[in-house]
Image (cartoon, rainbow, N blue to C red):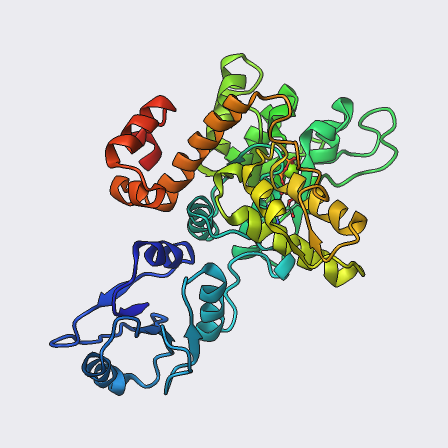
Length: 423
Ligand SMILES: Nc1ncnc2c1ncn2[C@@H]1O[C@H](COP(=O)(O)OP(=O)(O)OP(=O)(O)O)[C@@H](O)[C@H]1O
Ligand SMILES: [Mg+2]
């Protein structure tokens, strides 16, 4: 992306998350646009701070490159030669449109729109950026995060964004496999290999050949199955139960856990060598309460999705609902939000859903004393604002309308380690 103008740090983040490299030209004088071989390039003319002379000079610079897809930012009406008029704030949805224009299809997430990971908070931009980096390489990915944060959705997105899209994606809940059948479910068995094995059976790994296998709740995998899985990862071969013939298979493994695997390793419940094999690339799904305004975006998204399939009156959220969406702690994360929105949409008679329809009116204070709620809210406010301002203390202080000293003091009070958070 050749950006003619001044991108903000948020805009730089959005572009990076969507997989764009950025080159900035802010002064038209003496600048040159050079294109390399097969690079896919788009130009963005940023007219937000432009005067007429500057805009004209930039247009002159662009003139010899009329085949460059050009988009403009910061004017109401569509500008001459511009394929797309972007508006502020620049978000992932607009960048996706841009990608579609530049190269037909390069899905940011799943091929179906509903597979998309909704969110443009700093925390989710980091997730999108990791997905972009991890998808094309064939290494194992370990997805961590609390329940309902979208671990499975992220694994699917990874598959859809990889060269394996179009091949099978098989999701297995390791905790739900009956202990005596784990091996044969995963790796298959030969006829007569154990009582009940009436015929040969292909295991899930063989069925996923060429594609991606998603091992959910990997921490629940029994130790003997862990040994076999390690072998599949190390050697790329498996043996069906009751057979000594090894079969070559090619699967990418994405594993997920909401328990602390390092801790399971320390207690001898999980093989350390397997842990290292799985934990090559790490994708952490942040809890919903750390995603700032994404909670509203998601609530609107889920309501709109529900309205497409059902006749409901509800078409939005009132102020009390929006307040509670932000202050609720979301222990069940995105899944909890999804279920609350659907339930409210069915039950409510109103066009605007309120806090009581979401059953959130007292949720915040239930259990906690008011002081605890305040302390919690303060911590969340600091953390979210720090993230949203790129851990820039002055910016954070400005947004919260406090002094920089106060920001430092509050970080200390809430044990927020700036250095650790920044990495
Ligand atoms: N960013 C998102 N945008 C849209 N939908 C989402 C997002 N994150 C999660 N969801 C939806 O929330 C629900 C829960 O997501 P998912 O099953 O991927 O979570 P999980 O982390 O695997 O949960 P668990 O730990 O309980 O297995 C799904 O219906 C999923 O489609
Ligand atoms: Mg899951």
